[in-house]
Length: 231
Image 1 (tube, rainbow, N blue to C red):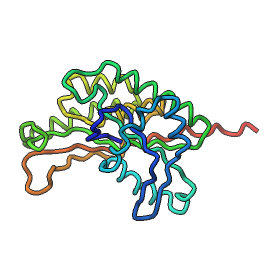
Image 2: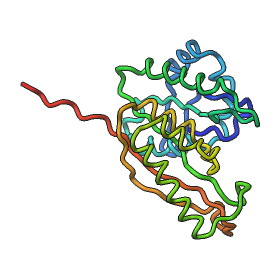
Image 3: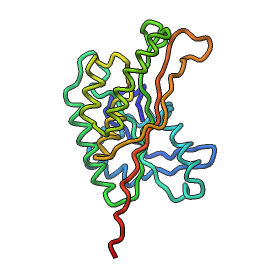
Image 4: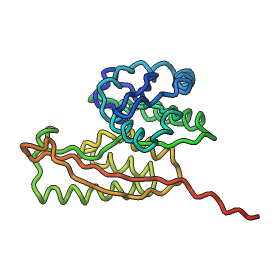
């Protein structure tokens, strides 16, 4: 999920804490957190309190608990907050992409052979006065939708490098704060083609409208079908 406010500006932030939902508790895989802390360094939990006020994973936890139903009692989650790819300062940190890649490599290795589902709590553009840009009229929104379609094509292709280049082509003028979360998802499900399930433009705030919009989409990356039994 997107780390919107991490005060320590870490690229990756884990937590050992469980998540309470209206359906009950989702338990965190503490052993996996500790393994990643040991292999990636203590910085992955240094900003743990960022999880306390972050909505990007809370929504996904509620959805996941609802989908799992009674199976949620046995399931374990790994809550991961993703900071900006280049950091929050005016001068991008060139170390960040390497730090994120190293974490993703360790995570992929740690869950190899396990039954896992990766979920990105992410969105796309943030434009308008609420986000310190000019208000969008109908023509602007159509141009934004056309631009987002290009990005979504890279996402459905599962092309992480092309997605990165697309986001940064205009210095991320659309203010896609979920760049790292979406990049991470693509790296964790390599060679899979996604399916676009929906796209929306949401006013922010809803009332009164000031010409500010957030764009969102839903995609799925199903696992390849098991090969047929040759016997």
